[in-house]
Length: 71
Image (cartoon, rainbow, N blue to C red; front, side, top):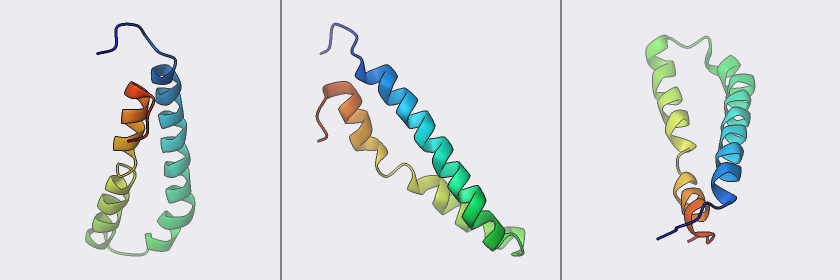
């Protein structure tokens, strides 16, 4: 168990926020115009999938923030 603060936690949080903002901007720039003409019920599954996809690499990233290792 970690007893002292580490630089990885604030740095990781900052990187996470920046990465999420970049991901959201890319989705808004490239995906949203493509599916805008679709009905709302057709857009919903696309946004649900895109909202979950960014979580996939998050586990390993959080492990790195806590331990300093990627696995």
